[in-house]
Length: 186
Image 1 (cartoon, helix red, strand yellow):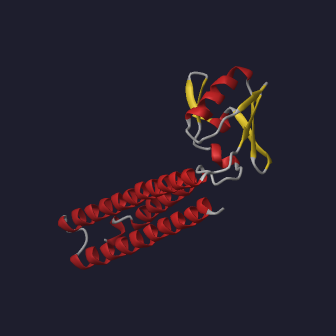
Image 2 (cartoon, rainbow, N blue to C red):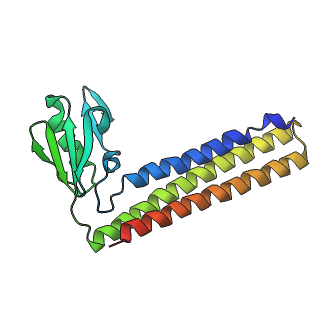
Image 3 (cartoon, rainbow, N blue to C red):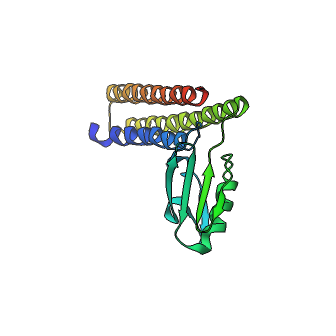
């Protein structure tokens, strides 16, 4: 009877929230160049909105410089606009089909702003994890009400879901603390 509750699915959805948060954090710049910095950039190309890496090659030729080589010359302007519109504080310089993007030093004010953004991302993902927990608890109530699981099984699964929720939120907090240290590091 206990097979009717998909605890692995709950864990998978919670862990997906942590993975997504780490991708969001990769897009927050910390003063050094990283190709993942441009991951959130979406470009309007060929009538669709696509990720930057599908229309260009991103490389890091120097520690404080990104290079974006656009494959199709007709997309250069769209890529430049998309990078500026992403509000990453970057100003690309167009050189033919290449864009050179110098990474400016972070001011103390900008570091604080990035920390606030990191906190916002973390809170959004905590909420996502809590929503997964709520879905799991609702499913358990429905299974108990329909007599597919006993009260004891309901209580045991509820405890498992809560423990997993606490563990995943702890990992989110840990990732946030790591990112904060990285941002505030001089």
